Length: 269
Image 1 (cartoon, rainbow, N blue to C red):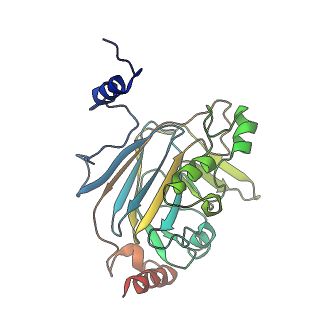
Image 2: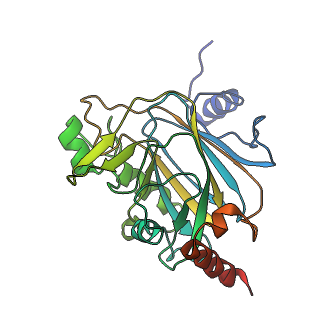
């Protein structure tokens, strides 16, 4: 049986007939996941070349899963209450005296506060150096990089996402890329770790502030493969608590503990 959208009544019937349809990449509303350890507040599969943005509360745990081994989760973060405060990749690295992110590391804002903690990392291949792909970089790699073409870029996907929160081009700041790694060689050379990797690798982050979290799932800017290669990404979030006073992540370094104190001072009102 076919349906028509030639008139409003037929269009209505067609739309209602779609109720309950499931595809691989979509938000699940209401959120539900049987493998989350707490009350699920967000469940979504982000398509290859897709994006998402979500406001999450302090203490929320966000688990990202590289479903098929070729996701590239480029991430922006904003203070949900005051979005002029946002992820600062440079401070995230230099305050921790480390260029590589993994379990036990912190994600810092440009005001010296902890935005997120990395509590589980099964991947080990991440990138805090190269930033997001652009229309120009995708055009060089694939012949086209336009937002609504066959080879969308992460930066333009970010702009669609942040617009949902009243933000614009000037707010798209340097990002972190999860699941695609970059190492710096002894000679200073940039060494990409692109994969593909084993499917099902996970990363779990904990929000230490109320946040706007933005993800774009597009090929890494240094991906050498001639084809536009990226696979879906799953995000699952559940309610929880921010880091406790004795949390190992909080007390691992003096610099990290000071950043947590800055966060707690912000919420002490």
